[in-house]
Image (cartoon, rainbow, N blue to C red; front, top):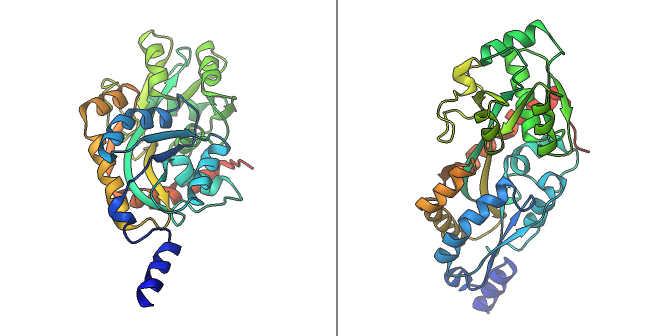
Length: 320
């Protein structure tokens, strides 16, 4: 009777006694919170062959875009904690949205099992060449001399690029005006045409225009210089000490996944991220591989939630 009770208890918990030992016995699905071609999607597709090889099962990419990533995050949080549905969490779903949305049907920490930190995707502060500033220090001085005159374009209110700009405003003590667009391409087009003055743009989209002289790159948002733009300083070293705002990514699953399954997934992810071809593909897309285990990712989220809550409050940004 005791043995039957134990088996029943384990089954209710979401996994049979031998389940963790036999994991995975079928395909593992990873939910992506944005569309095909997004940075999150690129990361998953770069990792897919290596993950499939290490897990010995299909690694299925399932794009569930919408609501700033909340649709995929909520679906993950409500899935069985058996390791067969996982999620590529982002700075939005695991940090910013907690303060940006008044009603969120998941908690960025408590609703998930941490699996692995993946990497960072910094942006670059770019200007239209008509703006008379050739460094971060000069831009700050110009913005202070012309409060509320300079403007910046983004792909929408509450996005990580919007809040990166507001963090810059807050730390530099300046006021630049937000001009939101429907998407990243529209925002970049407005900057190139001179409709707007500056932008925190993705590295991959900005590089061709910087090289062509159609945009001026002042600094990257990461704590250190990046391989794809080694000549461009960080914003922190170029005039705003302490500034850092990178879009980061990590793998999570529903809360309650058994430790042996988390260990299997974490090892597969970290081994995949150590492969030269995966690193090369991600770097070419503007993603810096910065792997870490479950506790590393948890600590990052714990630090980022209050940081972005402050920025959201000061900017007045809301998404609902």
